[in-house]
Length: 218
Image (cartoon, rainbow, N blue to C red; front, side, top):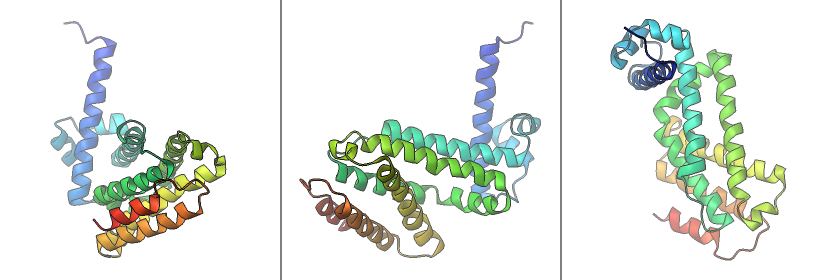
């Protein structure tokens, strides 16, 4: 019996890899990284356990693949799913809101990966790629606006990192780790964003601050 063509084998491998990544993500979140075995992951994915070692070189490599998959998804969503806002101020506000929600949605994943990053430098090295890639995408989005094109590369990069830092601190750290009320944390994040918007030298037009206060009242 003839074997599968190379293209078919590639598709099958990609499908199995994604099944293992999804299974590991689910089990790491529900049981914890240490308590989850490669046998558990393989059984949940419906794959042979040996594939984890063949494709990812073990459980640690699988966690690295999950981190990279999350980064790729964030970049893709920012590039293709999140529609541009009408103006620069509204765009910055939208990006902060988006990052706050994303961090909260990823809270179980962050609960796993942050402690592991402290123990395994290789994970920290992959995580570091996330802010770098996000900054590039956000800078590109901001350059769509005439006011954004007036900002220097350093200013665009600073705004991009601001979005990530505020999202992480007030979308994850404050409500999840420090147990602060999520609505209060979000309101604080939006107030900080308002201060940033005031410092950006662009025509006010439809005030981003007004939009900000409207969102904060929701």
